[in-house]
Image 1 (cartoon, rainbow, N blue to C red):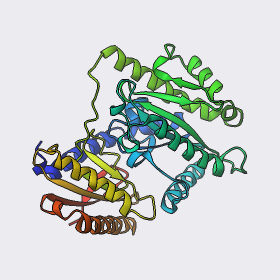
Image 2 (cartoon, rainbow, N blue to C red):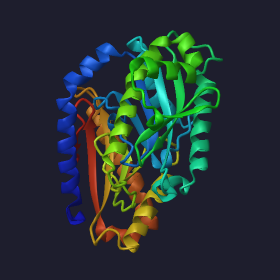
Image 3 (cartoon, helix red, strand yellow):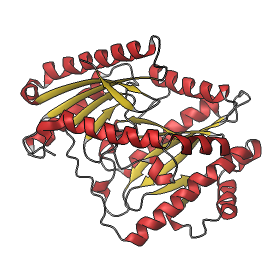
Length: 353
């Protein structure tokens, strides 16, 4: 694929991944009947961090929230609104919910870790820990909670073996790649020891966590046994993606994703564009185009939601172009723009003319 056909490439990727999502509808329904807890993952935009693969679960079971470096703040108004909306959905289904607050690293080479934190695993972990504390402050056991509870769990993602590092309540950690016994009983006991307070008030959450942890144990064991070459993070990104609904866009080293979470979007957009500019100057784009991709989401295809999503996508494009035209004019001749909306029922994108 030459990036002169960047938009065509994105349309092909979306068509394929949307078809995969639709194909797994029955699997999602069956899974939901068995396990009621809602799960979400706050994570970096790195395309290697694909939770359905990591946990061997159907697409759409774990709700992803993505941003540069996996950096979020529960005080950001729109992020706060998105989390509250997600929790209210769980409440409406009479479900408890779990947020995985994540950071990622490589056990073999720090430069395969998170570029957003300067490849500093301690810094990335501390940032995620601070975010977990924000969730604990709002939703934690010391607070008065609704009938349905929200728990935040700190999770490291090791990208060489694709294993999850679970951080327990008392400072202990468990690398699931090191667990040899993947029986339900053993995994359940491990989770109970890591999260005794969760088990005390919501044993159903631990029960529903078991298949995710077990899936990762089996996944990591498969990676280790295959002795596959390590997937390098060579950071040749040429897409600046702004908005929500990028579940379908999880190709490594292709996109820098800016979630629409904070008040001043110009700063993270400027960071993302500067990284793409660097890649271009270093000759990493092979003379190809740069794509600005914006997205608004909707779930109800009838009524106002699709039109609101279109206005959101147009607004994000205008904000991004304001930054590019002011600070990165030299990129304009190589820039292609793709404004979209995403149907969350299918993950299919619609092109805004």
